[in-house]
View 1: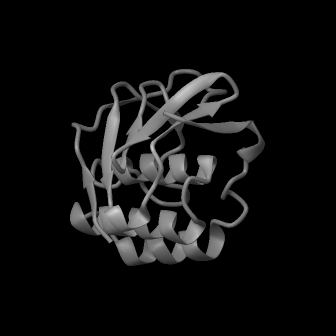
View 2: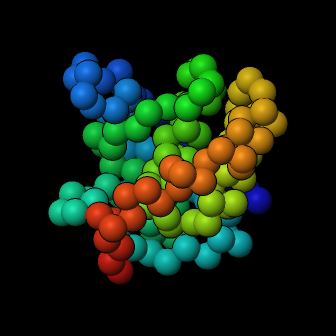
View 3: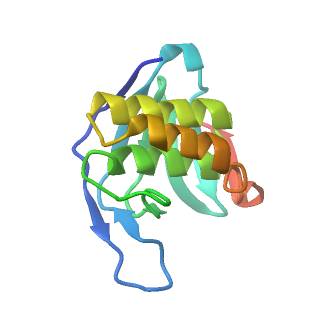
Length: 142
């Protein structure tokens, strides 16, 4: 499975203690493996546009909030993949298995610390978090 981060990774730490830990400050674009065959679409949380897919490239819009790596240290090498993984878990765009694989592939490609350990953790412990807000997610054609 192939995966590429197409844009510079740009986030800030949230200053609101009731908010998520991080917020991306620019569009984050990920070229996903063509084998995944994702439809061109817009992804909303209630009425807020979170991102869109065009030509198998996922674009996550600015101000998407995420919590970084759960139970694992956040580093510049793993945070871009934590953002992608959190987005995929929240939206249910891909299966849990494919979402976990993309986290693993991204971490390996960027030489992040302990990708096999992280993959084992999300594979075994990620079920309660996968699709946990699906009822608020709306996907519409582009």
